[in-house]
Amino acid sequence: MLVELTHVQKSYAAPSGAVLRDINFQLAAGEAVAIVGPSGCGKSTLLNLIGALDQPTSGTVRFDGRDLAGMSANELAGIRNHDLGFIFQLHHLLPQCTILENVLIPTLANPSAANTAAAVQRAERLLDRVGLKPRRHCRPGQLSGGERQRTAVVRALINQPKLLLADEPTGSLDHAGAENLAQLLQELNQEERVALVVVTHSRELAGRMQRVLELRDGVMQNRMSSDTPRI
Image 1 (cartoon, rainbow, N blue to C red):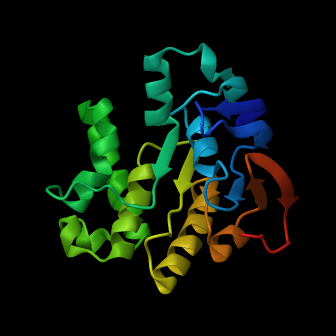
Image 2 (spheres, rainbow, N blue to C red; image 1 turned 90 degrees about the horizontal axis):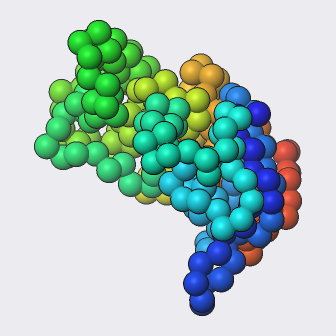
């Protein structure tokens, strides 16, 4: 298993209280899973725990067989940079940088000449894959919303992560853009052999995943496959 959560609980001070309650979750390498549920049910909190951005109040979070609680800050930063890719509802691209430069930002933590050359080649290949290679020298303000989000997907993939974590990746897009991005994520999950966990309100995107899990009031209540998610 790539990710294992065992009896995980996450609580905050009142009035929030317990956000996640006794979560047990496993994700295999290369698997694609959607997490759905109403706003405020703990979906983003769960994603933050999987992504080593937060720690549970109790329970265990393991990534690639390692207990995240036993890692140093530097080790966690290394996992976030090399093994995880993050995609958010807003693209968070740097407006002063070109698309190619934005994609290469995660590689700066290891800036040897050999790695830089390989990273540029990979960036251009991925940009070509998502239809953006001709736009690689443009800046974000010159792109559509869908193009900016596709750039964010390539940036998340640049370090060849084992897992992509996507938090409402289609939330800021129109219907056509959302459908295109949903299809792209599904295809890249298969082509890049990268595991994918998507938090979404989109039925289209959730329906493309291999599994759909539902969170309600901090509890993982339903495990659905072919059923239509209750979002």
